[in-house]
Image 1: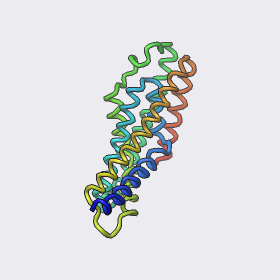
Image 2: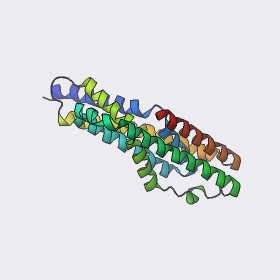
Image 3: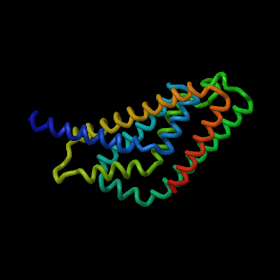
Image 4: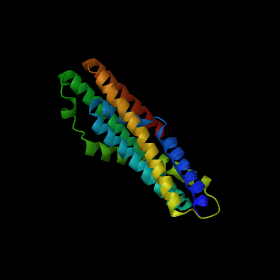
Length: 214
């Protein structure tokens, strides 16, 4: 029994890791916001935001593994509203980021970065979790992977659990790497002008990617 189970669990583990990295690695609006958020706050806040993204990926991996065809079909009527909602949220974050960067540059109040930014670890986690959950691309991606790889025999609950856990860990590792990059960026750009430019460029990228979602 152990000999038969090991290759199956290994396959589920590898499939989950590939799925998690496949959806996490492409740099989009969420990844850009994660890096810029960490750069202007702290590594702790960025790590919580990264885990928010990974949690959403893990939840969608679970739904895709359990739902399969039914999930993909149920999402079809609401894909457009979800895409619009996600784009609007990202645009609002882009505007907020640009306004904050300009306000701080004019006020020259950059000495207590982590204390002055209202985004704390809990809020960062909830914000990134919500943004990622609004992204229909994530669930469609996982549903397509599960449907494409599912054989004729039933998939066990253990296989599904290994797949979902591996997808979560893969996504979390990549998002935490991005947060670490954002923390290094924040330490490097300590000048008033450098942080202003970084904030405006980040907001512009997020806005463009949000528009391209529509």
